Length: 156
Image 1 (tube, rainbow, N blue to C red):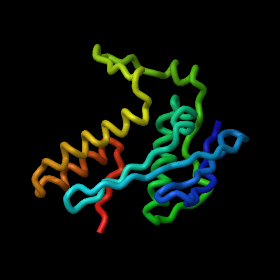
Image 2 (cartoon, rainbow, N blue to C red):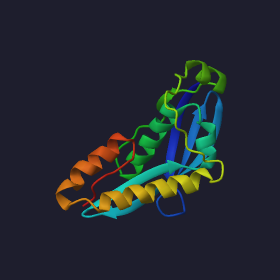
Image 3 (cartoon, rainbow, N blue to C red):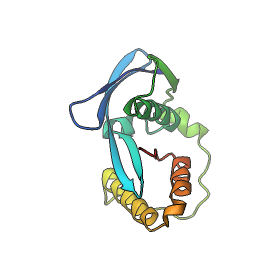
């Protein structure tokens, strides 16, 4: 099923957006939140969808990333043309058939913590590590974080 972003509108809460998507013929609304943390002279900006978005796109991570990237553009006041095609939604069965086997023998048990707590904890750990870097390495660290799909943007 074709997925399109129909609109991204600022929501009442600060740094949040309501995103309307078309998946096949159905419309869905999701909330996105952007968090900003200071790292030296840089601001680290992280944007993520709500729990329903994460659950809905659990087996469609590339589509989810494209949606998130459009929300980041809107958050940063960049031009975005709607509707915007972001990919094809596949069923969990189709996604599992295409999945490559995971070759690591180490898994992190996350049953005891909700995903939001894990994401927040991971985010805080990453920020603590980056804050210890010398000022001369912050640009390189921000570029590295961007490569991990963490939205980091220097803000003047």
